[in-house]
Image (cartoon, rainbow, N blue to C red; front, top):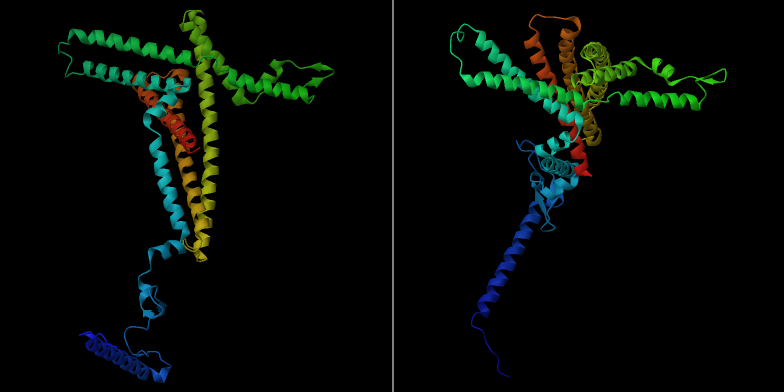
Length: 376
């Protein structure tokens, strides 16, 4: 039988035999090199580079020295699952924040009478501030002998009319605010009747008795609402002017007392928040002394950071509320005690500052409500 010969067969066979012999010689060489230590390489103990821990290669079963320097990303994320959760949480938070727009917050605010009251108050006191600067400049020596344009007097009259209109509108928006404290008084009265606390010798005590024995904040708020409504009806022409002025005076006194009580409550609330902050900070400090870090105990560290951030934000808005109450206290003190010195500029600045602070607080509250609704 004839055979087919390949021209390069001898050459390929010779080269394969040569490569096999070379690999055999290499293996014998490495075996002879590491025979004294069981087939492993001995490092010089006086070398500047310490021996590295061998790792199994993902490509083959041979050992690769020094591959632990470059840790794969998949293994890093597998060993730190909290890193993935934090990144996802931050991405979701940023996405949720972008859903709530300023126009949506203002729309939600202006649906309520409180939000409209604050918006009208800002406009009212901005106009008062403009008139204050205009009057001050007109009375200054620099512009005293300057001829004023004819449209300026008309504009001043329109601004004054607008300020009075905004003031009356705001008074109408807060009509019947006394229904809130009255409802709480009635609930307490019915509760006392249900448990027999208001019965004396077989007779039920009237609602007026429960009103007079209500807590001071509730009683003052009720009187403030009734006085404000009487003063508003007087401005509308439904009640006599003298009665309206007396009711406005009583309303100012109730406003002053309410502001003082709210300042005391604000101070107590802030002391509680500060104490909670100290507890969280001391707990974090104690854990750090024990050697606990964010990597060793990520759950506890994340909880402490979140709680501390929440308390700090709450403390910030408590301070804003305190400044607003101080502005109200200065404003109403001029009406109650009859201060005359710098009454117009002081009441203008304090009224505008109180309006901005209360609006910012209402804006934050509506923002959180919309953000919570978007997450749901």
